[in-house]
Amino acid sequence: MSKSILLSTPHLGDLELEFVKEAFDTNWIAPVGPQIDAFEQEFCQVTGAGDAAAVSSGTAALHLALRLVGVELGDEVFCSTLTFIASANPIVYQGAKPVFIDSDRTSWNMNPDLLQEALEKRARIGKLPKAVIVVHLFGQSADIDPILQACNQYDIPLIEDAAEALGATYKGRYVGTCGRIGIYSFNGNKIITTSGGGMLVADDSKLVAKARFLSTQARDRFPYYQHSEIGYNYRLSSIASAIGRGQLRVLPQRIASRRRNFMIYTSALGNLPGIEFMPEANYGQATRWLTCLTINPQAFGADREQVRLALAAQQIESRPVWKPLHLQPVFAECESIGGAVAEDLFTNGLCLPSSSNLTDEDLQQVINGIIEVHHSKNR
Ligand SMILES: *Cc1c(COP(=O)(O)O)cnc(C)c1O
Image 1 (spheres, helix red, strand yellow):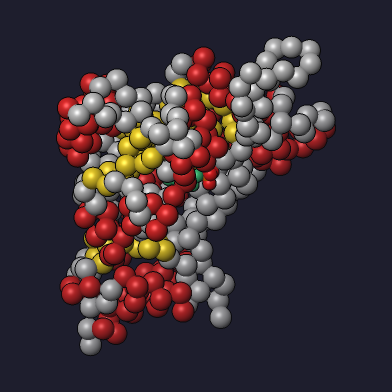
Image 2 (cartoon, helix red, strand yellow):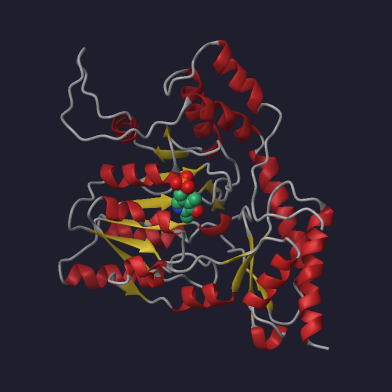
């Protein structure tokens, strides 16, 4: 049996170990010091963000973001439904309630018209949400301008969950830097990794300073430990920051490799009946963090699950598109606005192996696996 081909794996460059060695050599190992400061500064240079706070995960960054915009017990927060559960869990950590919004077909991300309508309705009954979380899925930007416009009209802060979309652009800007606060993830499966970590960015450096304060147990400025607020232990370690500095330097290559995977998949599979790839919206450039497609079972001759299992039998890991959050048992009581588009993408959508270190042979093996399923069902 040949080696297995995984969905999305870490891909280290040449400089990570040097920065880690620098941390060791200078004994700056604690979650404070020059590696963290440098990682934050370099992250701002790359993304154009005003200021950045490095934290232990994307989930932690999102939790801090909700704290910073004042989400509390009993509030509601609007959130994309087609996403990973970490986009919504921090809403519940705050004792607030998520309301889920469906995707559009062009970007697979939050439908701006649905958001606008929902906010208008809520304004009429005096029950506006405290914040909106828009997710940039699979490396592609949501349609930010109309979403931001709808939020601004009612003075609701927009939080961007760009965990999957570092390096994706919207009208020339890096996603994550367009709303009030943006968050990113450096989990092992993301486009760059610190082995685990996250970043919170905002143009307002007071907000970011507050995020750092809350992420280090909210210590008031006294020689002894005094606290007037409840904080968290969410700061990123120096070692993880050192890895992140190396990874940031190869981000352009990682994006190019993932986009190349997508090109190879589309040119080999794009003409098969019933196969459609996630479209690239015309307002920006996607990173193609994951290459995703939908399979129409009638036209293709096999459904998504048959394809996934056939690949799995060859040690190839693929994964259904995210199960929408409004279908998750844990959110069964939550309101959702629309949902049919996300449900359809979940039913028929598949994410293909997309690591930046896949070889041409790996890609060809995945392609052959999918073509074989089609041929065996259409003989
Ligand atoms: C990965 C991910 C997160 C959470 O990031 P962690 O660093 O794993 O906590 C949040 N939102 C989305 C959309 C993600 O894909």
